[in-house]
Image (cartoon, rainbow, N blue to C red):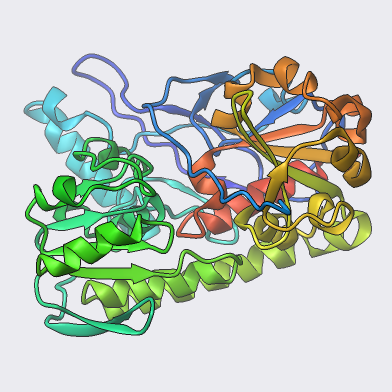
Length: 425
């Protein structure tokens, strides 16, 4: 079951830190099967009420030419454990405390460090996947210079990582997990996790970057994944003498630890990247083992919909990160398997009826963009599916679900819990 430590700091004005609603980690715990909208802890929420998030643009998928609105949560969810969590590093606490309050803060941080091996977040799970990029890690010294391979087999020499510009949200999160957050001078608008990343200057959107905007930050290293572009901008940056390292974005759950290792190597933290990659790999295996019995027994039929208002409504299929997450959770990707979708294609009633999913998976921002559950039900074909008839709609944070990074074990665990909840009596 989910293990939690409650850290509460009193005095100097009250209690600081967000209230986090957690979902129990034991797959055998029972749930009421009726679901209108399952809002997991992938996004900040307070007793089911979506909290405001900073503006961001999620990654729109490539469309193949062949290609919190609140509803009901899991019934009885208020009966599961909750945490009043104080994240000592990312909450605006230190500037509000003086004297004794600072000593209390430091004391609590030391206690948490001694008890869990990390500083700040006090939430862990039995598989260990509770560690996130928001936790502080021991500061390591990059071993430079280093020669690394960028995508396309280009060998790049990295000599200085004091001023890093990050092109994608997943790579940004990996760097934070490796303790390199203070070296990031700018990131793109998908780099909104952890909280400190929101404060960084923005260079625009990962697919529509500007060389001038990036160069204005005088980077010693520009790093991103294969979603970053356009290619001409990356060429301009290289031409300006900047070290540019591009890693594969990945399209399989197993690619998460590989990407972490590559990013670690690119910033001179090969040992640390290998260690974190190994940890994530172990956690992924543990999550899949945890849910293997449920997956073998039920194998729910799930469809992923990418939504961005009335003009961008796509059905996902094979070769996508959403497909990787569904398969990783033991579900059948209804779009890929029953509707023969590759990549993303515009939603049609015929394709939805052919796919006929038991459950529909969407992203939080996408669901909001169509007007929540009510708006989703108005999309032609949705009401004709089993998922539409039973209103089985699962909504998750954009970056966490599709990043293939440090939080992927958490995301996979929560996706699995949501998929199999109706089968638990």
